[in-house]
Image 1 (cartoon, rainbow, N blue to C red):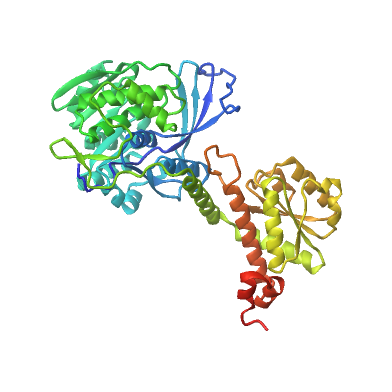
Image 2: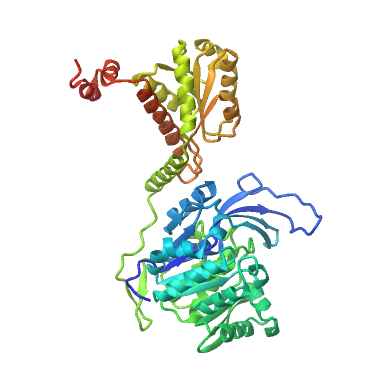
Length: 554
């Protein structure tokens, strides 16, 4: 591998938001069951997942510079996944024009077995010409490129491998589903076999390998040897669950046993963790047997957690260190690259960046959420709000701004901003409305109501009270289908998928979104009403802004 490559490993394929459920047992046809409660108190937990993103996540946690590319949608699932990539140092290069980002519903029973139902979305819409047009340079930037047979069309995966081989980039193909699912679901048999034969490293699950060559029987070693003879790959690695794995290389075949997991929680993604460990170990110069030993340790660590991605990086690394018995390795350390002879040497490229400072990470979440909001802002909604506000003002109506909790502070700001830019407005105390403050509102007034959830009981009661008095409502909310939105005359979207911060609960990005949506509305009002510099100075004569606005004003 060349030390000049910017990334150690880049991948394309399934990048999935996993919705995990716990069940007593997996059901058959015409059976019913009760979902078990999760640790978060609900019956579903959202986790990072996907065959490709999982193995990139484990490789990144161990210390490789990783990246992912392809097609996604600018939706809640996509924003969740890209945020996780940012947190874990996985570079991403997506074109956000897909119909929907991929998700999966995963049901895990008390024995750790699972059933998975996938909706591939944008991944299945990724075409060969799209990859060559948008991502050829990204492929060439990596020392190794991985793809899969799971959700990506076979023709697209084959094009990725061809681009990589043209550039001298090593290739990995993960045969994650049996051929009977891949053909015709993802393409035809000819393309499947061409893809498998173009891989330098082919990693099929045992069930997939057995379906390809049933005469090889159930022995993973025989299956690995048969696949290597058929497809002439540099190496074939067949994963065999808790038993371990089998490898077939130019030097022969071998079986590498797996360490015993402490407890079996969830088998989802064990093969993905295995592949991440294998690629890391090879990048560090280990031979195939030692590399498989680390890979098996990663697979065992994975089944001890719920979900396939190493979301708790330090815990995952600690467990891998306990399970691994091979040559000494620095796990999670700065990158080292491999010399032509196979020994490790300091890389010419910079080491991977350390995890982002929590403040910087939260700032990044807010920026990404605001950028997503900007792309979906509806000018027609602002036009409707302008018409409502201007119509009210023309008839002597007034503007009131209200909210509960953090939006109360936003309401104070918005009322002050409106007033200073030509639209007189007052703050309306949300909880006091039903205790007499509704009296400041008369028929024909407009109340701007702010709520991220759109379901805050006190605010809904306030809105109902002022509507009975004849007020019109402009809702600024993160849920345009919420009770607040349904009660409003006009709805302005201020939605975010993530707040930022360790817990992700405290209003951060949502407050920034509400502030900026209202600031944007005030800017439109300012322009539409013909508000002038002298008008602004008359309302703001003091301070630096007063000095600035007063320059040249008589």
